[in-house]
Length: 269
Image (tube, rainbow, N blue to C red):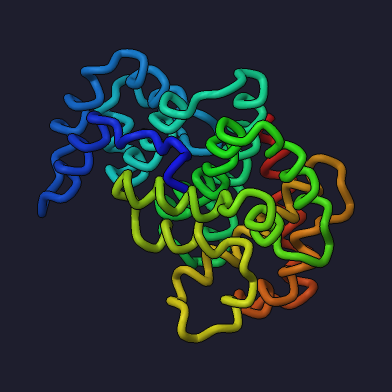
């Protein structure tokens, strides 16, 4: 793990988190922090006004976006944008990675809202950062793409077990380390670390909020695979039953939720 470069926490994120730690965070101060980066301001406005997040009103300024969405949700969106800037690698592969990560974040938020489980900002951050260790391992190990493909198709072994065997670390551990270094929520950090270890879904010793995020990630993965035309999902086969049990979803309720998620992802195109 020491040989893998973890991007340092961006200074803009440090300033933002410092203001968020105040007893009454000021949207105006947060807007001023974000406004110091013109590119970030524009990207945040574009995201805030996207069909997934916007209501009937359109935000015309960063401060309006913060007031419409709330400081926590805007902070989550900004953290994701900063991650895009911080992660290096092949542009084509990164674009594909961020597209999938964005879909996962949307799917986790959708399911968490429907089931009234986790705050939207926590769900969004977890979904977006869930696999953040993947491009970092791609940069470190020339053969990691082979490992990723192998693990993605293995129906028996845990994804991270295969990574550990080949590289003595895995994307969940690296992602957890980045999340901690960046000052993200402990629930997000732990859920990233455990999101392929479906045994925790039956473990009452694991915090319920963490288990819920892990369960939502399994549901999101199934929905995303279906959206891309894949009837089967290896991760769903491994953890789907446990995830539904933890979320108290019957087979019919699960099918209905996946139908709604598919329609939502389709409308986002």
